[in-house]
Length: 266
Image (cartoon, rainbow, N blue to C red; front, side, top):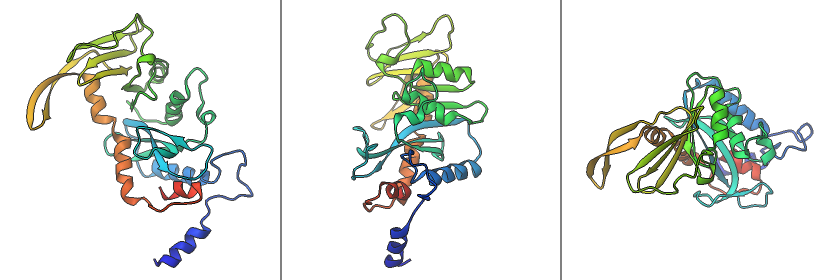
């Protein structure tokens, strides 16, 4: 395709009908595209038992009231989205674009980030599902709700979201670990582990099992004791990162004046 032909298509590209679109929907410009993509993702790939959920960023420098800033992302300013992908190969199964907190609320007793996980799993049918999330989403109420639905979940957790138990230590001696449960239900397991730094893991599907694994650092192999929850989390929590890595080879690198075109070319 020639440059002129491409720019002509780019100029007149449109994704929705302005006459029939919902004026109150901030994502009305891309809603038909997102719905069609999710339909295709679910049509051509069977559900999988291990999934990871995380956010991603679409670079956009223009003015937009739901534009976000995330400090620890390579793309710090832009349009925030959420992905649910296969934990093994990074295949995208569901995608959502952030257009405001109220869009994700299903349970008023949970935070907006916890409701995001429920949104992704709403209508998801796959036996023995295990979800891997980071500390932005993990909380005791969310994991208890998922346990009621028969969905396993494990993720890192912030210090202010850990189980409502007696005061827990903020740090431990190096290479030591402790386990706590929500007695008497014993549905949740909190693992505190001091590796190279403090690691806090919350799970509704693990036992306090410690395994010995082989690790290699600077060409030196050693045997190391790790919690079983940490071993599984390290293996399966990078599905969304793999999906983002694979998608970077197809991105359209030019700037766009229209925010919805940035989403389309992403």
